[in-house]
Image (tube, rainbow, N blue to C red; front, side, top):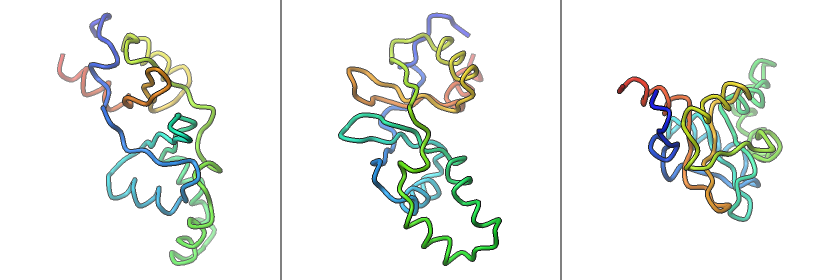
Length: 137
């Protein structure tokens, strides 16, 4: 991996986001329809967390407890994103070296890093983005 490559060259720009007060039912629909594994969560325009498929699966443990799909849908409508999202959020600058961002993801055991510049979300770096980059070398 080129040690000088920057996060901004590999990240996904303009990721789909949700608000911290949105309901899990909406998050589930967005993630399923968009085939998205990580959603940055905003509050007043600032990144406050990340919702991952894993967060949804944990909240969907009710499925394993025998709750029927209709009841599960109702339960997802009763839970807010901020109740299950990962927070505080770990972010990275678009000018950070990709190698350092990858190391941070490994050490923290996280699948993505919201990319923030001047307190504004500008992208999302995921494991898949890094693998896609490495595969082109």
